[in-house]
Length: 195
Image (cartoon, rainbow, N blue to C red):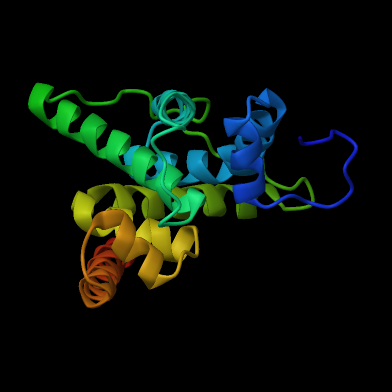
């Protein structure tokens, strides 16, 4: 049983085992541990804060609902990121099918964090513009490259875990990351040249 006042940080597996025994506090701890990382991953994938929040919520609902089906052949985090990635890809396919264009591109809906007040206004503006270009370039990558670049470069996952998540050999995962990075560099180079 997981105790609220436990000083030692429990592993994901310990929390999950406790959840399987009926301890809902363990699930809360998993949500707290992974919500921010999953939200960051999904937001960079779909480019819309509200949609990302909905997908992360659905991810946790599926984790909870399918908790008895989980087999510990991969890390629990890998399983959760796989669920989130699949939901994000489904959202992108849905958007493409219906040709929905997000009009929520203002500062309030973009999910950009509030900048440190110690920065000068011109630095803040330049940073927001740069972040916008980077996010736009990431969003324009094909989904198979976008997913692996985000998992590797934003989430810092090892290639082996990425390969398990996307269901391919490690070499293919490395190749996709490299191709995605090259496409991203090319897109950003063109933006810089146009400025």
